Length: 616
Image 1: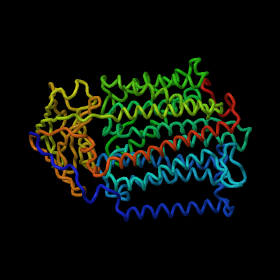
Image 2: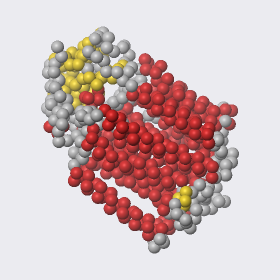
Image 3: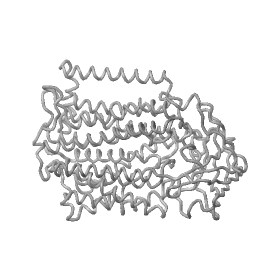
Image 4: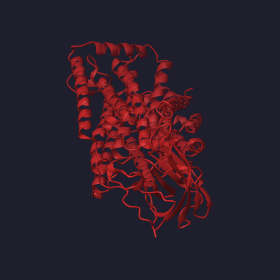
């Protein structure tokens, strides 16, 4: 007879949207800043001020780029790093502390909002700055005498898409509760807009390179390095979809992690190698590792003292891309891109798995590899082709005919979508339970610590090589006195058929949420060991007696305790579909921008500013 667990969550006063006073303060503050920036833009466009244009031109003279390229990119680089720090910090706070009291109570939100706001501003600067010139052959006409560069429009559009995610996130929480996961639809808007804005940056820089103030001054190592750093920013941006795996609190099947790594690596590294030439991929991944390493130290080190996070290196992918660029096939960019993507999805991902096994919470078990390769190989090939298309644009070479390149992009989106859908398919076992015997360990800071003896029913519920069978304790509060800084993960040790034991104590007190988690193939399920009483959401305590038997349930109902399921299923599906359509529109806009630039500028087979694949 299973012990009654009681309601894990119920209607309460928290867990929905933010307090209306905080919403009003944030909206009012953002509105005032927006009005001030619009006023500066108006004064510049009406020639009542000159300092903005003078500042842009001075910065542009350093890089031999028009001011409408130089100033926006400098602002973008500063703000995107601010947003990245805020984002990793925010995820860490939610992992260690749980939900916050509101947007103003979370210091990380200030960094995110400031970063995204000025990301959008950087794009608008590129649109507003040109006065007496048409900024390039691909520029888009706004009024009779006002033209805007394509890259600026794309950066502003991506930034606006990310910013819209903030108010929509509050609406989402009011409708569905707080889905404490990175992959909430409105969360994907925030990170997707910011990450994909780097494509706009690369295109804007290309437009600037074709409109240099001093055409006789060749680009040097500084511009090459800046481009490499922009590609490094792109691989970081595409990596943020994996951040739950970086902390070890992923709420989706583990097979999605290598697929996401391959998608980011194949698109970015193929495009970088095609554009910048030999050894560029090492600079790209090196820059990404330094930035992520600094942010990880700031967040998980003594400064902020939040749960630690690690990140993929992409070094194996860089090695295979560089080696394949030495082959004669590199003279056929699209075929080479597909081959490089295949190599990234096989040899590259195997090399990356060595790093994953060494530093990540959840290594990739051998039993996962058949499905892993079934997802990574098509994703890698598709990503390699997309990277080759982007590299072709940035080299100034002609793209395939419109029907062909459109078909390639549509196929790539469908392939990645199918792989993602497969990774989201789960099964919750029926009539499965676990009997848990807890033994008290030495208390930490006066709080109860326990070890567990777990017997599964049925005994063959998991295979000999599951993705994980673990006890996760999280949201216990960030601080030096808190074990694991608010996060503890114990990978259980198998001692017999269906019989597992702890390898270290886990907390069962205070605000800790301690659960037994299981993933084996498509099976993804969990049961609570200890859950605190939470008056804010009307959730009863789930006690941790010395011995109990509880059924396995859908993991989402345990980990996303604040989430509300009291709504029609179609409403959640419709809301998610709207976000998906908006994301596809953003991808379509970036594709349109790249094609417009490629069609409007003279195409060559390599210039002094754009190095072909085979260059050294």
